[in-house]
Amino acid sequence: VPADSAYPEVAVAEGDAVVCSLVAPAAGGEELAWCEIRRGGDASSATIRNLSSDAIIVDGRVIQQELVDIKPGSKIVPGPQEEGHLVYTFDITAAKDHDKNNVKILLDIENAKCSICLNLWHDVVTVAPCFHNFCNGCFSEWLRRSSSKSRDKSQSAACPQCRTSVQSVGRNHFLHNIEEAILQAFSSLQRSDDEIALLESYASVKSNLVLGKQKNQSRKRPLPPASDESNDAEFPCPQCGTEFAGFRCSPRAAHIQCNGCGGMMPARPNTSIQKCLGCDGSFCGAYWYSQGVNSSHCNLICNQETFRMISQHHISRLPDTLHGGNPYEKDITERCIQKSGKTLQAVISEWIAKFDNKELDRSRLQLNNVEAITSRTYLCNHCYNKFVDFLLYWFRVSTPRNLLPADAADRDSCWYGFMCRTQHHRQDHAKKLNHVCRPTRGNP
Image: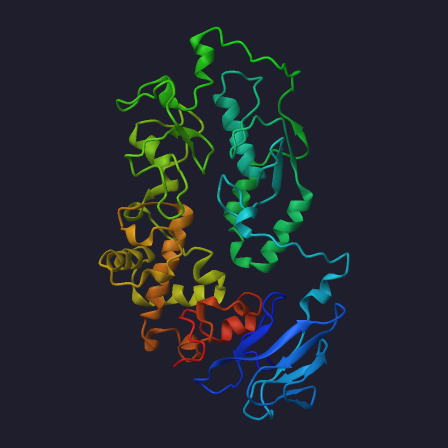
């Protein structure tokens, strides 16, 4: 941990013991592999070995090449004297995890999102027997719509994610605690008050609910339905039972499942409106709209706004994940757009044109098939937000310093740029340095 908060912390993993970091605070400094740190015989100790061509100082001792014991709080200088060098303090983060009442759980935030609204859970509920998780409001509304469309009122609703027949649903207090912990760590994922109020108005799951009776399962294959009417309910998709837009599924047609609503649609490889080129996920909204099918024909259909051509997307507010979720950088970008006198949509349209003309380096675009993407490419909302993040990155780095807000114009750039991890857990660092820039790692 550097004594000067303007510089990032240096993480040392078990499998990568060599410390490669800045050793001097001067501008234009280089990252050097200057020492090796390995865990000691117990959880609260470690050893350090000097790898540089010069001496280093550990707890006041000048160290050449010998192996030295260190502990949390040890003061380390990556040079023979403190003057002209950074000063680090050693710490073992895992030492804080031994308290049984303070267990840390590593969780990818993407796995803590509701597959209906694609946002972080709110008042999370879990369905059985598949154990998928959703927002209480999202699933309650899904359940209401499924019940209103179902011909067989005694039939259980299908899980929105995997189509398994849901037998019960209940609030998950354990995951609710994780949901709150994620919001504390990433406040940018917090929804607006209006969104929360709408979700809570839909929420109907107050305790464990049994949604359908489990009948004794026979080992024999069930008899085929007695009529065509009952067979309609078993059709994988609307085009299996009815012709729409001149197409009807053949008896053994292949189907793909929508990543948004869990519904099925025929696999038609010659169309570009079923698969998101950014994540390779399948989405049904644009396809069913093109076929003239809507929710009156089948309730398992996404809104067409969930999957559209880039040029057809409309944006009125900055994504919460903009600039890696750094709220200070997001605020600066918002003020830059306001200062330009243009709407957010106008700025995005302007940079989409630059993107189409291949004026932008696409290496930072965190999507699949980046070279094939144009303004006519279909993207899901999640990928479109990543695309907007990419465009606004270039908008910011292209903004002259004199057009930045006064409190942002004189900031130095962080060595690690947009890849800096310290900006996510140290607000002073996130605010003090500019992170909308490429990692320089000491190079001018």
